[in-house]
Image (cartoon, rainbow, N blue to C red; front, side, top):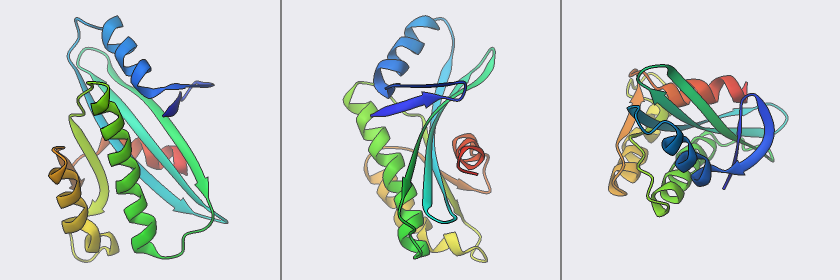
Length: 150
């Protein structure tokens, strides 16, 4: 699974990168937050981000961007965000890398359309053994993805 840095166009395997990062900063407390956001313009763009929260220095972000034909159905497009996050989390788990949290860009407030996915998406993520977070909580991976996809 290929990701990039914000400052470099070279692609790399996300698991190899995470393992090397942990090795390089082995004396640091690092948490991993994973998330995805999407946006429709002429096509649908997804950005999946992995945020390294390094206790002593702040955050480091890597990402994967994917462009697909326009997905006009809101449920399908937003569900694609959960699927991409889970796919990445499972890939990392296969390489013995623990994800601390999957940030889901859905809102617990019923006045938002994304609320319709909360129960299903949180259940999906948690049934696989990951912790899920939704809005209005602070979601660093989703905010990073929103910046990249925009």
